[in-house]
Every structure is written in structure tokens, then in C-alpha cells.
Amino acid sequence: MLRDRYDLALTTASAAARDAYVQASGLALTFYPGAGEAYDRAIAADPGFALAHAGKAQVLMRQGDVGAARAALATAKGLASDVSEREASHIGFFDLVFAGQTEAALSALHAHLAAWPRDALVVASAANPNGLIGGSGRIGQKHQIAALMDSLAPNYDDDFWFVSYHAMALSEDGQLALARAKIERSVAANPNNAHGAHGFAHVFYESGELDTARSFLSSWLSTYPREGFFYGHLSWHLSLFEIQAGNWTEALRLYHDAIALDRHSGGPQQKVSDGAAFLWRSELAGHPRDAAAWRALHGYANNSLPRPGNGLADLHVILAQAVMRDEAALDTRARQIEALAREGRYPSGSYLPALAGGFAAFERGDFSAAIETLAPLAGENERVGGSRAQHDLIEFTLLRAYLGANRLSEARHLLSVRRPGASGVPVLGVAAVS
Image (cartoon, rainbow, N blue to C red; front, side):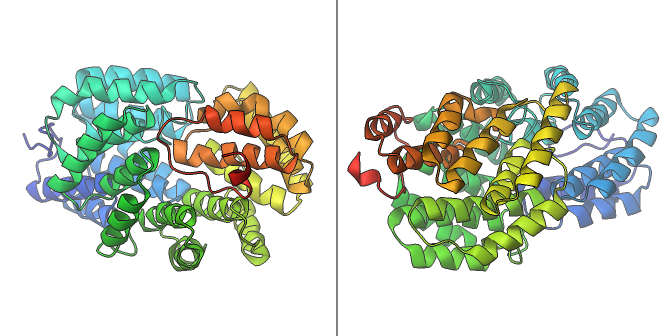
């Protein structure tokens, strides 16, 4: 029987289909362009190859083409009666993920990986900071992901892809020395891995090593295809380092080159998240508002993400609505989230609707009201999903509110309990309490 890169059996008799599937999965795991086309070649060689349809579904979902993704997965499900137990479980797991059945998907995840720990596409969907576990709404999920990757590590040896994901998980869990050793080993073994570059950016952000991160990302992006899914997001990471370094001209160049709506290489969720985060964090650092950019982002977010679904993306949609003083849209999204939460379909519950009120108050300049809302939520940032670097937007907003309200002792306390080693705090006025 034909097998994939991780020695897992594939239900296809076509060597051409197998080869295209292996290539497609490698591109999907490393975030290089061409995965969808390679899955199509696998399907052309064997239309009954269920896992190729499932792989294509994952790429389409990442790109934000939800309808096509569901159709591809439906095709895979229709072929699942003739596949192995592992492949049927793989397809069933992604069916639960796509349906938003978080608790059932988490149960299926652990059962699947207990039986087939080298199913890398399943691992990737779980270990991503904004993946299944990251988006579960649970406090403590950073440690859960790290523990999962620790448990899987003996099955992967020094596989460059797994090591990059493991490093990222350890970094998010605060295990920076281990994370650094792993990410350096991963990028040395194979630099052509966008998630390796992503992990490097996060490890060195958490370690506060600004110059190392800037040098690495600038060099790495020069060889990564512009159409690569992570080009925009990694440019966003680089822009944060430039803002922190005081290089506003370069940060703004990166925004216009690769983060703005018409230049970003990612799907709708990534475009909204990175664009809104750049604009908001720029203002927190004291740089001028780009009103036209916010208007465009607000319109795009309302059209491309009209209903809530992903906590991290919804956070940034809420930011755009707050900036544009779109109280009707803010209220509608909050009510939609609360309705989904009552149905058990929105893992973070009422966290984001509460946060929305804090951002709206901050935008009005009512810092006391913003503090009243944001301060009690300060220990719950990970419920929204995403990385600690992304959570800093929330923490920095609270810090700026403390400074704006002249509540300097509370600002000092917030800085004193900030995670050790983390990158700097580019917030206007922070020098008064540093």
C-alpha cells in the first residue's frame, strides 16, 4: 500500500496521486503556495482519493472560501466508506472542526492522535495558536498545547516541521530556552518553512530580542513568495519589531507593502486581524490615525466576516467597528456571539461582548469606563485564541487607558506582572511609569 511522508497508509492505487498528495501536504504544512493545485493534481490522478479532497478542504478553509471547503469535505465524506480506519477518523475529525463542534472535535482529536500520532495535518490543526485548542475558549490552553506537543515529540524525532510547531507551543507556554533551541534547529534543518519563520518571530518576541528578530525576518521574507499565505502575517510581525525599535517609516512601509487590504496574502480573517492590529497598535504607540484605512477595513470586515465565528478575527472586527463608532454593528455582533454561546457554539462565551464595551469606551476617550470593563478581563486574554503577541493588543490598550486616566500606580502594576522576557511596550506615555 502507498504511504505518505509520515509512513501512514493511503487508500489510492495511483502513485501519481500519492506523490501529488505528499507534495500538497508538505506545502500546506509549511505555508508555501501551490498546495491547492497539488491536491487538485492528486484528485485528477484518482478522483476517488478521499484524503486529497479532505486536504483541499483544509486549504480552502484557510483561504476563507468556506463554501468550497465544505463541498470538498463533503466529497471526502462521501468516499469515506472505502478508506482505512485512520483516514475515516481523519475526515470525521475535520467534519467536526468545520461544523464548529469544539468539544466533540477535541475528544476526537485526542482519540485520533492516540492511535495515529504522526497524522501531521491533524496535529497542525490542533497545535496552531488559533487552531482547535487555541480557539477552545479555555484558560490554560497554552499549556495544553505544549503538553500535547511534548507527548507527540517521540514520534517525530528531529522532523523540521514538527520541531517548529513544538517550539512555538513551548514559547507560548513560557518555556523560552527550550523553544529557542528547537526553533533554531528547525530553521537550520529547513529554512523553507513559513511556520518555522513564524515560530522564530514568536520565540524572539517573547525573549525580547528585537534586533535578532528583525534581521531574521527581513532576510527570510526576501526569499518567500509574495503570494505565500504567511507573507502578510510575517510582515505584520516584522512591523511590530520596527514600531518597537522606533522605525515608524519602515513599519509604515511594511503596512502599505504587505499588510494593507489590497496587499495582504492571507484570507479574510488574517487580513482583518493583521490590518486592525497594526493600525490600533500604531496609535497606541503615538502614531497618527489613518482614517481612510480604518474605513476600508470596517467595510471589508462587515462584508467578508458578517457573522461571528472565530474569536481572534471577531476581536479585530470589533476594533474596526469601535473606531468607526458603529454602535449598531457592535451591538449586533455582541448579541450574535451571546446567542451562539448559549447554544454552545462560541467557546469564549461572553468574553468578547464584554471586551467590545471596553474598546468602545476607550475609543470615546472614556478611560475610566474602559478600565472598568477591561481590567477584570485581564487574566482571560487567551480565551480569544491566537498568540501572546496578539493578546498584547488588549494589555497595551488597558495600559494606555491607565495612563490616560492618570492612574499611574495601576499602570506600574500592570507592567510589573507582565510575562518575563517579553518584547518591549511601545505605548505612548509608558516612560512615565517604566
